[in-house]
Image (tube, rainbow, N blue to C red; front, side, top):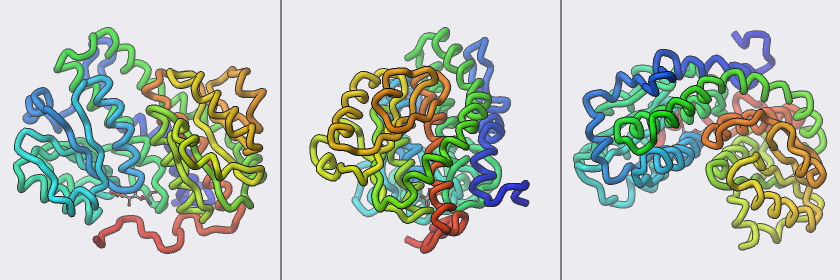
Amino acid sequence: EKGGYEHFMLKEIHEQPRSIANCMRGRIHAEEARINLGGISEYANKFLQAQRIIIVSCGTSWHAGLVGEYLIEEYARIPVEVEYASEFRYRNPIIGKDDIVIAISQSGETADTMAAVELAKKAGATIFGICNVVGSSIPRLSHAGMYTHAGPEIGVASTKAFTAQVTALSLLALYIAKHKGSLPSSRIATLLAELQKTPDLITSCLKSEPLVQLIASEIKDSTNCLFLGRGINFPVALEGALKLKEISYIHAEGYPAAEMKHGPIALIDEQMPVVVIATKDSSYEKIISNIQEVKARKGKIIAIVTEGDTVIRDIADYIIEIPFCEEALTPILATIPLQLLSYHIAVMRGCNVDQPRNLAKSVTVE
Ligand code: M6R
């Protein structure tokens, strides 16, 4: 059942070229810049008229929501707020019938996310569910939605569900953009064609596994680890840190790289591995300065870079290359080496990767 892999988590990491392809199947007509989302049709106008969108979710799904915020604001030009479902529901949120609430949940059964949906629904909002488990509670509570079709995820640490959520949000953002006219069709066509290449690009990211294993063996005994990213890759830093915490029990934090100077830089010394997402995108020059700041304080830099990067190679202790892609798609690719890194560190530390202590696959308690 683990398909020859030692753990479900590793199997699920390696399944991502297929799970992403399944998420896109039948939904993309790149040449015509058309996206087919059956589950939205009746409510499409709501999205076109929406003054704002609120995303509610927990854990890894909340990180996917943060990526979604960048994508929807950038392409569809609708303001987005991303909320922890638990905070949203207990806060007497201001919400009404013109709002759209997107609930993201792998299991579709997370108690806090369900309660947030119920509350928003009562207030008259339109609920759009992005879930993986077909027929689960959140899709049944939602007015409209889309499944991520990543297939069953058994490992407690979410991997393929996350990349499928980001894929689904990319499709949704482009769908709204297309119907709103907030992005030229030619640009939509290009982005869709690029999105269709991601399964192959993930396959190439997975080839870095032996190198990632080597890096894992170098940093596995650390007690702390920082993850830095900027822009659309800031949520990837959060996700990298969460993955490491939950399966290896190493204390890890994700930060927007520019926030370092406001406090966390005090933590840096030679004992501190710092994983930086430093791909060639709009934040590239800035992130190089952030890397130099860490290096000046003797932190150990592990950088996720764009294939062929020669600048960061000279500054970082280790680099892991990912293929060049559209900036909007880098979160999907940059996540892959971070999943592998946590996995191998956890295995080397003798941890129970698929069933980490104190955690359950779906959190059905409040
Ligand atoms: O099933 P959901 O997506 O609603 O679950 C949300 C979180 O409980 C979940 O992502 C959790 O953080 C994972 N263990 C992360 O790997």
